[in-house]
Length: 270
Image (cartoon, rainbow, N blue to C red; front, side, top):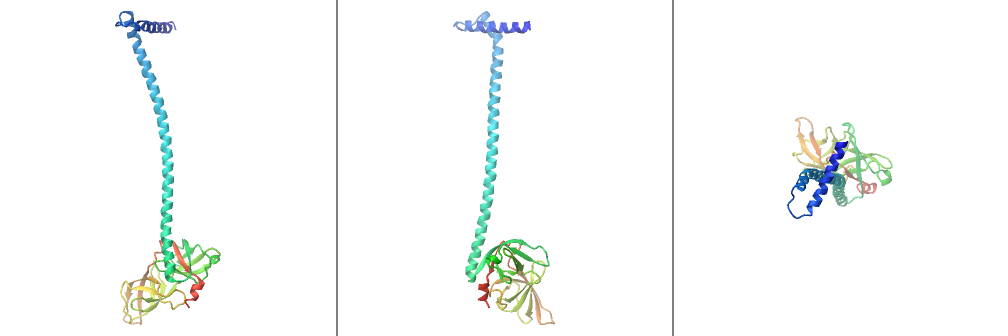
C-alpha cells in the first residue's frame, strides 16, 4: 500500500514538474527531462488505451447498426421476392384467362370460365374438380373445353363445384372425325394419357399426325373442336375397322382453367 501511494505521489510530482518546465521555452534539462522520461510511457499507455476503448465502442455500435440494417434489408428483400412471385403468377393467370376469353368469343357460345381445383390421380377414373357449380349455371352433361381443345364432360355437380370426366377416362366417348379425310369414329379413353378412335372403317386413308376434331353429331360438343392427333394406326387384314391411337392436345398435367359450355349454348347445338 505504501509503495502504491509512493508511486502515485511520484507520478503526480512528475506531472507538476512537467507542467512548470513546459512554460519555459528552453530545451528540458535535469529534473524536467527525467520527469518526461518517467511520465511519457504512462501517458502513452493511457492515450492508447483510451483510443482503443473509443474505437472498440464506436466499432461495436457500428457493427450493431450494420447488423440491424442487414436484417432490415433481408426482410425487405424477402417481401419484394414474395411480391414478385405473386405478380408473376398473376400475370401468367391473366394471360391464360385472356386466351380463354378469346376462345369464348371464337366459339360463339355462352360459356363459363372455371378454375381447376384438383385432379383425380386414379388411372381408372380420370376426373377433374372445378370451382364452379350449379349456383353458377353448371349442369351435368355440359361439355368442357380449353384453348388447346376438348377437356371432357361434367358428370357430377354440387352448388359450388363440379366433377369433369376427361377424354382419357375409359368411360369417356366423343363422336369425332379425322379433320383431313373426314373419317368418322368414336373417341374413347385409353390408358396412360392416350385415347383410341374406334369404328374407323378400314377403307379410310389415315396418316400419322392427322388432327381429330369433334363431329358435332353427338349433340354435346360443338363441331370442329380439336381433340388430338393420330399417333398410331394399325390395319388388320381381317376386319372392317382400323385401330387408331390418339394423343389429346390438352396437357392435363398443366391444366388450370377451363370453359364450360352452358345449357343455352348446348340447346343451339342440337
